[in-house]
Each structure stands twice: as structure tokens, then as C-alpha cells.
Length: 202
Image (tube, rainbow, N blue to C red; front, side, top):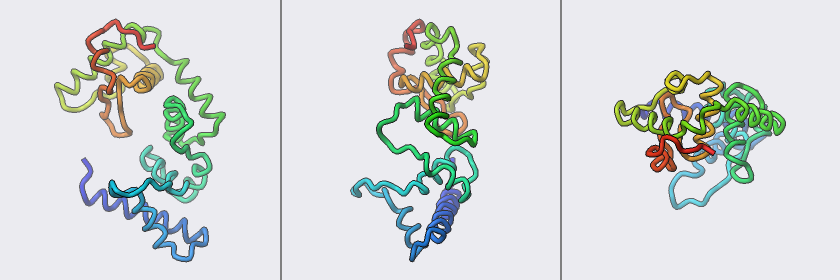
């Protein structure tokens, strides 16, 4: 669990990175610009404000465990996906590419989507309920989610297969996860499926 100190350190690092970006881009008051960007979206009463692409790129790099440098921000910023007009599968493919340090160009995203589909375990359609039940029971017993390796070992799937299966079930709303280790949890659509071990995934 992140502490107040680690969160403050993270925000300070992000602000410093944005300040340097603003200074390089010729902003008259780079510190103020960075501070303003970091304040956007805070508070329920504020209207939604679109962050500059470099700020979004910076956040994605950090969330997905990539180095947050000006060079990396510059590389990723042109490909930042804004909300809307993209499928969940495309977003997951985009995240997978960035987490590997690759650029999420439209061509690369399309190839990643196809690759994830092609690695789907053959027995997933008949075992969807089992997977959801396994994750649900694991969380209930231990208060943490199973690792993806533990899911693979339980169902006899290779690493690419378990990766494709979990992303597919997340797309269906049956599982959910974040970039944090052991964050795998049952999704909002998992209640009915968990009680039907033979339910189809498609």
C-alpha cells in the first residue's frame, strides 16, 4: 500500500518532469504551468479538463512501469489514446505494447490485438466459470488476488495463453486487474458466471 510519503514523492517527480517539459517548450512560467496541470481533475465539482498529451504520456509510462524521461514522453505522446472511439481490446493491446517499451502505433496495436486473440487457450470456452470461481475463491481466502502464473499453473496454460485468457475475460467484464501485482479480482459480470462452471466465454 503506498504511503503518503511515496505518493508525495511521485507527485513531486511528475511535477518536476512536467516543469522541465514546459521549460523546453518555451512556456513563460513552466513551474506554474506544471502545477496547474497537476491540479486538473481534482475535486468532484470541477469540470473535466483534457490534460496535455505529454502529461497523459507521462502518467501511462509510470503506471506501466516504464522510465519516465523526456525522451520517453516525446516518443509516446503522439500515440496517446484519448477516451472514446477505441475498443477495450485496443486499449489492452496499447497498454501491453507500452509496458514492453514499444510504440503503440495503429499498426502495432492491430497486430497486438490479433496476437492476443491467436494465443487464446483452446479450452477457455468451457472453463470460464472455473477461472472466475478460482479467482473469486482465492481472493476470499487470502484477501489478495492470484498471480497470473498461479492461474496458468492451475489451468495448465502457458504464459501467452494465460495472458490472452485474462485479458479476454477482463474484456467480458468477468475479471478485473491493474498494473499492481496480485490485483486480479472478479469483475462486475462474474457473479452469474462463477456459479456456472461450463459457461461459454464468447
